[in-house]
Length: 448
Ligand code: PFF
Image (cartoon, rainbow, N blue to C red; front, side):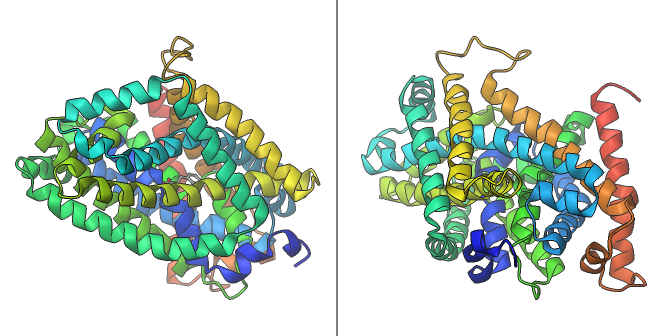
């Protein structure tokens, strides 16, 4: 427990499932999943996504948990202890976390603005989807407000991290998870019953493979990793706070199941409403911010429901930003030996700067392009479509092929002679995961 003084409250008190599910469930499920599913044809994408979760996401989550739990170190330190040459996985992870945090603060800020909008009656007063689209577009192009919200969100994350009010987060997560789930369930029923809702249900659930390309399979994989918070060391960091008695496989199953269910429910809310309101399902990152307010507009006391829903979303986003922030802070604190508070400030400073630029890329900095992408889109795609799958690939090569130090072997596998479940896990980590990822990379580079 030599490092536990800086982390104790996180690991000891909060159950493993709650913390990791708090990281996994977030804007990735409710904002990102529907928009990438909509851009990639709906039903077929869902099927591929489920396959990615089961065959790649789950084994990798178990591997990351084992790496963190057996070393009790931050992402870089964990690999350095196990096999110094593989520390590159940890460094890539820290870079990815920083980049994700940059654009995640922006979207999290949007949810906070929408929560306040709901309270002021702005949401309920607008009826048509078109009017919500205008409101959203005007808001994100504003030079000040969205950037200020992103900064406010970063400050809130920093406060929670540095004040150590983790019991608050634990309590919030305990109440928030079931509430978010119930709210989504109720909204899904309402949405499916809207006129035209069934068409949306068909789009989301009936697979049309003609829309599927290799690049959409890579997108599904990246989305699965983004949603499960894997491929970048966040789960390694969190698992380093697990108690010795934590069952990593059960925890991985539970987190994966909860996370996937929330994404599925989000799809059941969004797509029927999208078709009912005549919105294009491939409208990209704005999809949820136009669709959800439109549904709330059709409900009695819509403003109130909308405020509650966006509040839940703000909390879900906060538990995810905390995990991303924690991965970077733990790295700076333990590897660079910075005092924890200084480490947290450095993380906030760098990511908030990125966030401000990403936010401005919807307005005044829209002309700054990386290829054809704005900074926001570039951060989103670079991380989810390249860095996360790359981090995942390196992690399974490490977990599947590197000769394991005893502590890792004993944490990863239950049986020294490899029982049935162990053999399946090793087969997936050794062959299936790397093969799928290499093929996808080659295909998306136009090779093969
Ligand atoms: N899994 C989070 C979500 O779905 O919103 C996002 C995320 C959190 C990604 C933490 C990566 C991470 F390390």
